[in-house]
Every structure is written in C-alpha cells, then in structure tokens.
Image 1 (cartoon, rainbow, N blue to C red):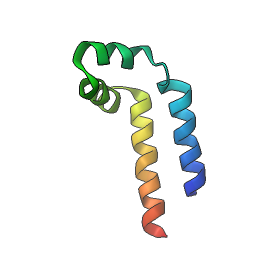
Image 2: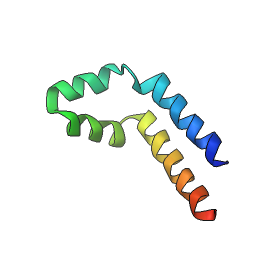
Image 3: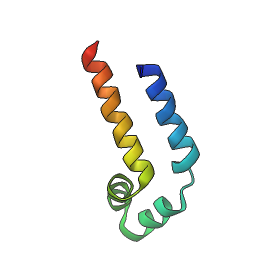
Image 4: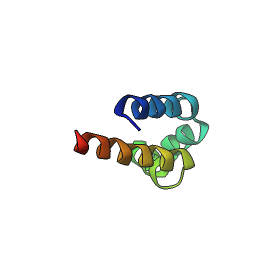
Length: 64
C-alpha cells in the first residue's frame, strides 16, 4: 500500500461511517468528547480499521 491510497481509504471510512454517526453523538452527550473518542477507538469496528490503516501509514512513512 502506498501513502496516498492509505490516506484516501482513511478519508473514505471517516466520510462514510464516522460523519453523522449516531453512536458517536450519543456517547458524546452521555460522557463527553473523551468518552466518545475512547468508544470509537476501543469498541467500534470502524475504529479498529482506522487503527490498522494508521499503523500501515506509519510503516510507509518509516520506509521512506
């Protein structure tokens, strides 16, 4: 994977699933921004995919 492709995939995921996410909005109202962020990172499957792509992006940057 190249850097541009990874960044496009991240943008696509965020635009498709995270923008206007009902769960994110609910978590934010319940526990605040940090609570919602933690939920997205630790529980959401999209968050898992974003984490994976972030690691891949770090690998690409380290190789250049």
